[in-house]
Image (cartoon, rainbow over all chains, first blue to last red; front, side):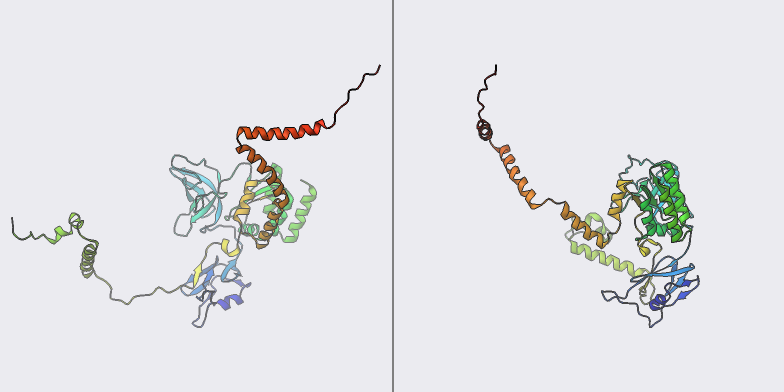
Length: 244
Length: 163
């Protein structure tokens, strides 16, 4: 199955395609001599011994054993461990209900902030923007968020400040912005001093020195979604000549 | 006033206050006996043991490990220095960047010569701090005498006022 999958990397797969693990199939051995495990990323599902495709898109591979389907999407499905930007909708007792763009509101306990105790409550109001990490996210339960990491530090999570703008983009643009070697980020770096917070749920919060610059940045990101690299370079060049 | 010891019932012996005097071994024995009695009464299925099949496929719902996505907050051209610090801390370091950092560290360190010069003056000042008052006065006088000697070497003659 491994070899079959490797052959089809880069091809378009449709939901319903399946890969069976035949009796003579052997997975490549890892260094310790044990059989390597296949990691099925988003878009691939395991059903017993078989691997099923559940989304249409291009099959991608990463050494040594990760496979996933790359597809266009705007709707976010909560997954554990991702950092998302949420909007606080209600405050009920000890729990905030946060909208993260999924099918349900996520809950965030008020103790899950850095330095929060029962007496020392965090300063979070309804309508605030938060950067938080998903701790529980599956199709059977309500998603749960926290604003601290395992050791109790905030690491940049928590309430996002004032003076910025929140925009909704497709998940593909989020992936392109957060890729390790991203052309888009390199281009943005050349423009003007600004700050960007990208949530995996397709929400981006931008802030720059002046309101005009913030608006320019927001419009830029939304239009970059649907442009090719050449068009984008052209747009950036025009902007730089416009001189901010 | 029975001649032999009173025969205590099993239930009484099982009570907590009677168990405190026993050793650990006898306690364990009693526990095991109890467990055996219970397990005989319980029903169980007479099936062979099923081994859980080792799954060769792991499901991963998030894209972050697949594509190695970096940390969500970023700041350009020094707009938010705290976020820039976080970026350096939380993003996976490249190998090339690490090498450059090492070279950079060497340049900001002071050279050996500067270090030696600094130590020369440092030793003097530290010595003065811990010296007793009279010794300190003697040291100051020496310095002053040296300075005075330098100054007095050039004696000025009296200038007559011109009419």
